[in-house]
Structures are given as C-alpha cells and as structure tokens.
Image 1 (cartoon, rainbow, N blue to C red):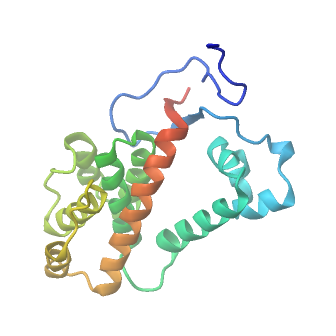
Image 2 (image 1 turned 45 degrees about the vertical axis):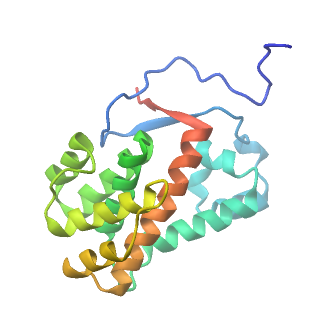
Length: 204
C-alpha cells in the first residue's frame, strides 16, 4: 500500500497553530486544494455572493460545489445580517461564538467573538467566555443564550422546552429565540465542516 499523499491533499506550510481561544485575527489553512482565483467561473463567483470572498481559501474550497456554497452563504447572511426584528446582532454572534467555543473551533470562535465584542461593547464578558468556557457567568440573559447554544450543539442534542422558557424569562421574544436557534444550529454544522477541512494558524 502506497503512503503517497494524494495530490488533492495539501500539506499546510510551516505555521504556528493557536492553542488557546482568542479574538485575534487568525489564518485558516486548507487540507484540500481550493480552486485558484483565476479558475473561478461566473457560476463560482455567483455562489460566493460577495466578491471579496474569492480571497478566502475556505470559500474557494467550498466553491467546488457552487450550489451548496450559495445556499450556505445566503442562509448565513440571513441569520446574521437580517435586521428585521429578532435578536440584536451582538447576541446572534454570541450564540455562534458559544457554539464554536463548545465545539472547539478556535477559528470560528475568534471571528464571532470579535463580532460579538464589537457590537455589544462587552469585551470583558466575551473574553471571559473564551477564557473560561461556556460555563462562564455572563449575566442571566447571555447565560441563557449560551446554555441554549450548547444544548443545541450537544450530541445527542439536549435542547428542550426548558431552554425556551429560560430564554423567555431572560426577555427574548419568539423571533429572538428563533435567532438563537438558527445561529447556534448553523455554526454547529459550520464548525464541523471547517474542522474537517483545514486548521487555524496565527497570522504573521
């Protein structure tokens, strides 16, 4: 049996992998060959939705299945960027960051903890989530959001009526609760995809 690595499998260049959760900007290195920028067709670029995503190795890798990528990106944008009612952006990002912290996805946690800190102005609380984990005390409203995100991410799933009741007691209406569920469920899937396709690296 040959021990030759297939051409489609990449050996990431020498790099320093982050070992702690951080809000710092990180790189992401793929284990499979992304499409080259010059190989992107109009169909691929349409699937990216945002032209700037062509610079990302992650999105160019997902562009190998353009239909799935476009559906994924439109879902992502509707969950996190739709301003019509529901949960404030900072708390949608909190749900994604908590899910990523629970699942061990350092790259996703870095991205969404930065957004949550930026939109909430609660940098210390967001950093506490990264440092202490999903059991950190962030105040009851944020604790309820984190608990719901973790329960949705657990295997087997542990989310139930008690989480909905806790969210309601914390002041969330039905649309806001739906946003917690959507943000956590999306990143429970996205974390697993990213963790299976590459690895984070520190910049510089």
